[in-house]
Image (cartoon, rainbow, N blue to C red):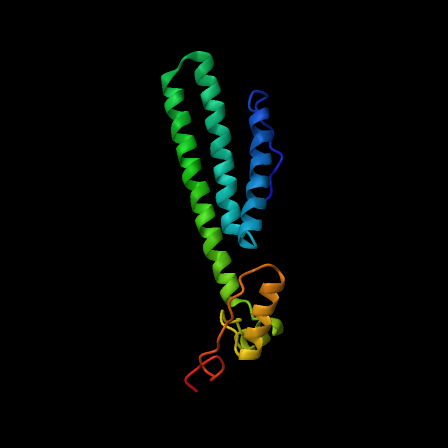
Length: 160
């Protein structure tokens, strides 16, 4: 739904400008969040925009006149607008999830799925020679001077 130019009461004109601005921004937010805005979501946003604008207008008129019924009308309009806005967000999110599930996976994603798990370095060195290199590097850097002994070999084992 695109905003239309409608002849408005001059007192409502500022609310109509804010309505159109809010509607454009809300569509953009939902589009960015979900990857698209359907006609159904757009219609909900348009309805919410009208109701928000009408609620603000009614509240202003109520403030000018002190009419409590107009305040009730304003509250009802803005409450209904909020419901339309929340429903538009919910539908947009669901449609976005459906779009992601329906979208064919790219070649790159399929290739990524076939890669083996990355090898994570272990905390302990794999070989005694590596252990000595680590110990020598620590000693040279002013670290501790104890020697790392690989228990998988007989190195450093006095019983051997």
